[in-house]
Length: 147
Length: 147
DNA sequence: GCGACAGTATCAAAGCTTTGATAGTTCTCA
DNA sequence: TGAGAACTATCAAAGCTTTGATACTGTCGC
Image 1: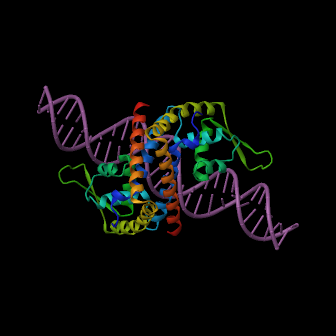
Image 2: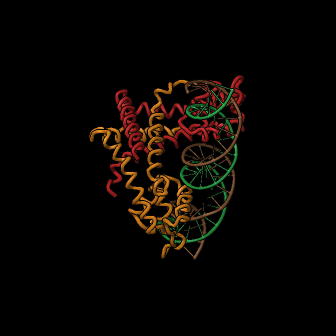
Image 3: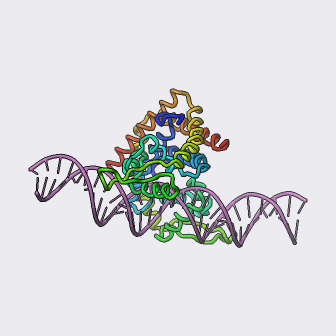
């Protein structure tokens, strides 16, 4: 194959992301949550009453994936869904008290992972990393468009 | 919560990785493969006769996850598994001709994504990104250990 | 008003990943 | 030799994600 694996930056990104997911998963599991569930609750806490579709966009997943996450959260009584007053077929999603409790517990531990990441780099390096990742993302998007 | 989302580098990493997966998925789908299947075939091509467990390590997934991937690949006749000569309960995995063909077709398109990433950065920037990601990975691992 | 369009919600199928548990094999060391 | 550790393989359950398809609702332009 015409490109050695050691030069494929995608592998480095994927590896780092897997370590991240693994650590975050371990962090939030103590609160009885998964990472996608935590992400949904986090977005929901900052914007109560969001629709499932809006939540999906906020969490960078498809509406179908969010539906599954929400179903599991609802089964555990961490959220509740009520029909919108006027747009009757839109369902507003809100945290329950239990949901807020789980989110708080999970976030406390999840933040320690983020803090560790931040602490490993200088402020300049963090900016550099963000910039490089953003440019990589743009390049990927363009390449995907031409595919 | 005690850390603004904009400062959570994990989000940037995750977003980039999702764009990467989405693009790679679209790239290899034309060859009838998924990204994990492509990764397994790629590793296998460089090391014929690997065990499923070794393959799992090479692809950074659990043996259970690799078992599922291999089952699907075998159903599509892209690999074959034969018992090891001496260690009888180890199964050696090898590409079939069809498997090699699918890998070649998939790699041709997957490489264009990697090339796009490489082209978006200078050589120095690529080294920097690799270094930063590596340090982030180490920090995550340490944080997970203390959790 | 009415049709086209966009947004929302959901079902279904296929596939990946994780944790947890079970079982057989090989190797090492006491 | 035999116990224990390490490795391999696999089943099962739960959950996430994707693509594809269906259906309902609201808005906008004609």
